[in-house]
Amino acid sequence: MIERVRLAVVGVGNNTSALVQGIALHRQTGSLVGVRRPVIDGLGVDDIDFVAAFATSEEKIGRDLTEAIFMPPNNFPSLDCDLPRAGVPVTKGLVDATEIDRVAAQLAGAEVLLYSAPSGRPETARAYAEAAYRAGVAFINTTADPIARDTEWLNRFAAAGLPLLGDDLASQFGTSVVHNTLLRLLAERGLTLVSSYQVNLGGTEDFRNLVENPDSKKQSKLNALSASGKVEMAPLGYLPHLKSQKVAHLNLEAQGWGGTAVSLDVKLTVHDPSGAAGVNIDLVRIAASALRNGHGGNPAEATPLLKSPPGTAS
Image (cartoon, rainbow, N blue to C red; front, side):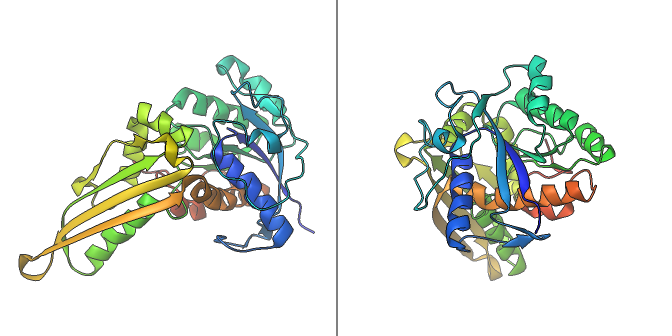
């Protein structure tokens, strides 16, 4: 019987809620709905145990992980499954770099650290990456802040035999994935792109944070798209009533044979945290497998799951 992955998480927000609940749902029902890869190197969707969790919200600190994921401002819905207590109390997260050793000590027993805090806090992301490095733990950066595409960080992890996966999730079925697919389809069919744009609206705290700290996210989104020189990103919009849903509007203007006009408009509505969890479930297993096999750095099979893997712009 394969040993379950021992996972620690930073950030007890909507994305973590979707991941915790989804694993419990799969464990109870065996459902493969929304599962991209049921097994990765012998690890199933339910072969993951949470062993540590870090947050900065006073309302979440000290609560069991399965209770904390439902505390405001989290607004991802409750899935139809029993959710037994994890036995993992949420611990106070990093306040500054002086606490790296404390966090590293609390990672004892973990194999993978999933960094799922809001984007736009590069110093915090680097501090957690350092804690993972000192603890000998694989690190997954789901935010747009540059870690894995920083060659110094990547080389350090690779030399230590530690996996470093990042940066920034390509949501399971999100705006970037759909947009890039449409751009590639135009090129494959011989059409000439004139212009394109995307508008993203959401109601999670991560969306609110990205509205206030948009720079790294905008570059990461452009990294995920081909023909980015002709693609515009509208400023992100935070609409609290959308809760965990994201609404995206895409437009593509192109020219076909003889210069005739082609115009395409698409509206996409998804639960953003579900899209993150559907990718994180694979990244966690890829990271654990790489760690167990002594493969440091960024595993190649993680690249399609990320917006800004190593080699893309910061």
